[in-house]
Image (tube, rainbow, N blue to C red):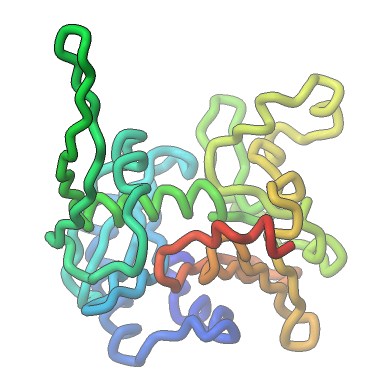
Length: 276
């Protein structure tokens, strides 16, 4: 959710129980403006909150002029002091995938994981137990990256791609119609496309290159991983992810108001394919 319309966005998402206390809201309103100024971001999004046992991580993201360019993630434990997180790497995601259970709430906390490593000496092969320590900060970076790639979404038309490549906020976007807001095909993943690049020219023939440049939710696997509900007498559409419980997207049809927020434990529902 955009930090400039934070209060309205939190109110629209409040139906999912994603609210914040008044003092946290006040702190975020002030601190996110300072983050935008100090880091010179084009936009700052309040990403959400990852619940920990000892403390919660409040997450914000800074975007440059190109909305699909590299995002900078920051975390705070008190909504006032923000620390910049390093970018996620494939090695980091692989390494932290072995960590299970709740976050502690301490970035310096180290998880211990035992791996079996094979060593060969001549014709003999030995297996040794090796203790690997994984920082919670690395796990935080990895989880944010996975959630972004899987369930960060935008309504069709909220962004537009220029002929020169960069993606900008569409200032003329007036919201989806009520009929379109109920379709998964009206929503796109807010990341660089993967499936779109594999489509044939015939499949792309009916697409508008300035608007349909991201992957649609209707092709998500497994099917049924999104729940769509109309609330407030059809004045608000809410999408909830069943794959990453805690991710809520909201949009008020025929208005510019839209956004998403994650409030959860940072754990993926790996049993979803067996539940559908």
